[in-house]
Amino acid sequence: MKLSDSDLKVLDILWQNGDTTAKILAELLKEQTGWSKTTTYTVIQKCIEKGAVSRLGFNFTCHALVTREQIQDQHTTELINNLYGGMSSLLVASILGRKKHSPEEVQNLKNLIKNLS
Image 1 (cartoon, helix red, strand yellow):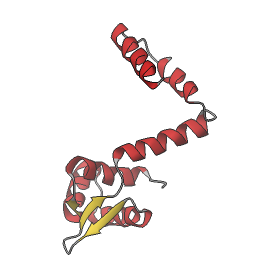
Image 2: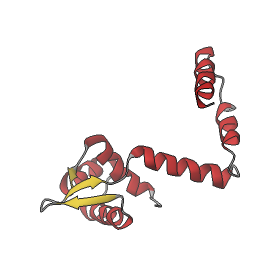
Image 3: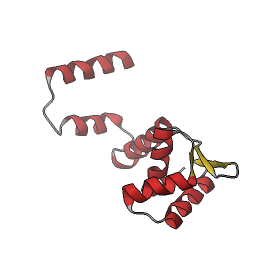
Image 4: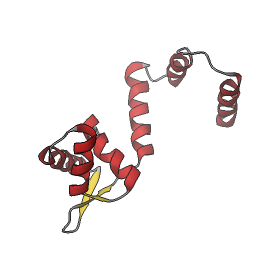
């Protein structure tokens, strides 16, 4: 499922707030992004067509059909495959090389790696 940045804005609200009416989504996205109600409704419809959102009832309550974790996993896999030749270690090396890490962060990373083994 290929989601746009706009789709993710709708999903982010649903992930944070749970099921939300299209009207409230439009109000929240107008505040956050300046979108018109029409733009929000168009993005919601695209999310429905992609299978990421369902619309329930007469008040058009929107429900996320995918979790944040599912989308994070999908995007991470695409990133690793497209930019790092499928090698997650290259992504990790790139992330770790970006800043100096505290001893606590280094220990946490070591623990994570140890728990993966």
